[in-house]
Amino acid sequence: MFVQTCNAFSENTVVVHDGEGGAIVFDPGMSSPAEWAEFEHSLQERGWTPKAVLMTHAHLDHVLGCAGMASRYGLHPQLLAADEPTYGMAPRAAEMYGVPMDPLPDLHPTRLEDGKSIRLGKLVLEVKWTPGHAPGHVVFVDTANQRVIGGDVLFQGSVGRTDLPGGDSDVLAQSIEKVLYALPDSFEVWPGHGPSTTIGQEKRSNPFVNGKGTGMMQVGR
Ligand SMILES: [Zn+2]
Image 1: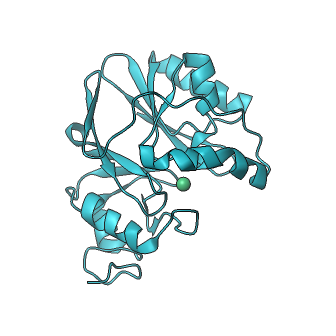
Image 2: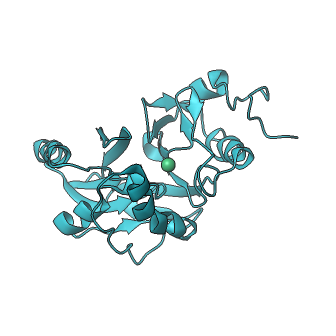
């Protein structure tokens, strides 16, 4: 796998090999000719061909490369239905932030579904709904490789912001505790911003939501 940090928001575009020469691209954020050149170079040196575009959610910083993935590779983004309104709002968000964005492509006709597994080449990814940062946010659990493509839910020492439309801090804390902290400590989390971390490290030290029930954002019980 490799991660390319893209656009004005330092968004992590995560690319995972499918074991058969294919590349699965999560949250394509490429937004300039230089970022597209870097992306294509990274694929070429590995001999990988993009096979699918999967979205953790559809905030502006995560969709900036969607038009290019459709025009260059014919790949349309797969999203949870609950995040379609977020996708629809991205062009307005781009205007608000003054970020140029090509018109977004149609979504892939197949929606992601909570609890369903996707098989791509040799890769098996379990889709888990993790609302709180965005209403239709999901994470992708790759059990065989002990890793999670996590989007903007759990960061190293932090959590996703909850002040955007559809955000809710209690719901986010529940998503982290019920979905992410239910995974083995050894699993590595590849988030939408910043460095990777592990479930165990965040359970021990994340100041927002920790495994002991003392985090600032701890779910009320
Ligand atoms: Zn986001």
